[in-house]
Length: 82
Image (cartoon, rainbow, N blue to C red; front, side):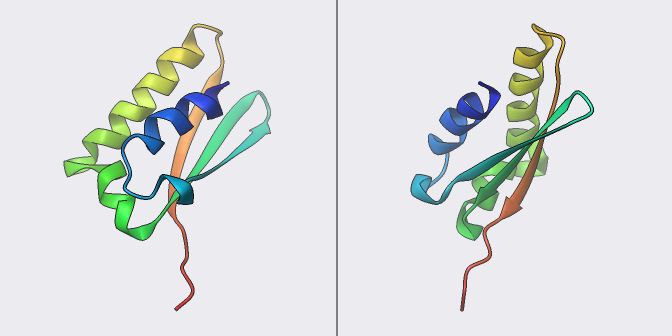
């Protein structure tokens, strides 16, 4: 549910939506969403001074708060083979 929301938001922001990867890890009542995007899309996701990723996280937190869940979002770039 949170993964689908994150995927929808991110794929509409990046230039390479086919490279977006999201995995969900649950431990001790907390859900961690690990977001991987292409290196060239990192700037689009992070934004100036981290504003975009902060906004994405706030949307996910607000959605999770309705169900009293704890959800965090981690961002990584996809390692491309040279």
